[in-house]
Amino acid sequence: IAGSGRHEEAVQLYEKALLLQPDHPEAHNNLAHSLQMLGRNDRAMAHYETALAIRPGYPEARNNLGAILQALGRPAEALAHYQMALAARPAYAEAHKNLGNALDALGRHADAAAHYEKAIALRPHDIEALIGLGRAFDKLDRPEAAISQFEKVLTVDPDNVGARNNLGGVIHALGRSDEAIGHYRRALAAKPDDVEAHSKLGDALLAVGRLREANDAMERAVDLSPRKAGYYWNLANSK
Image 1 (cartoon, rainbow, N blue to C red):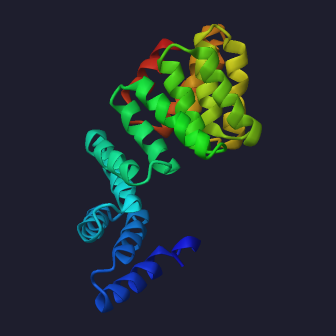
Image 2 (image 1 turned 180 degrees about the vertical axis):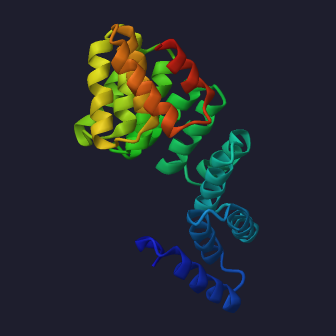
Image 3 (image 1 turned 90 degrees about the horizontal axis):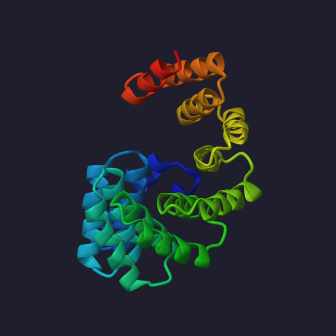
């Protein structure tokens, strides 16, 4: 049931299972995951912690608890859980990818790249890991390596908005703004309300002197995300 997205029903069933067997670590982990999917993070964390109290070396529960902490903006705490998950299961691709995300958030981009590479070696078509590696390479001032990762994603998934936006950003920084504009427009064809694509499209259009189009793109970014100050700054620059 949880696998088909019916998390409310899954929660009820896992809770019934735990009434009969309260020390079942998989039931606590699975209940926590469904609660996490429903946005009930406090309860989810409590059940992951219970699963780990019963089975301290449980790699899925460690990884999943780390993912909640990461989502809550606590990457240093998440990192410790990912490391413990990998100590229990060194070939755990999802934990390598998530550890890469935590390291990247902490500014440790070279370490992040190493774990993204491990994740990709274990799971070559992991789109999130490929994009993460590309972003880490970009931050390490390795634009050609970053471009290669984003292009790998687009070979598999031509409409991937994250890869289009990131690829556009790298090539725009290299002075290839007209080419970047094409990627942002492809991103918007796939997801018309993507605020990042509108904002980046505005920057690229501004760079090539297409002021009216730049202004339109930046106004759309402000409309979609009116509480982000940077979009107002960009819009002012386009006037």
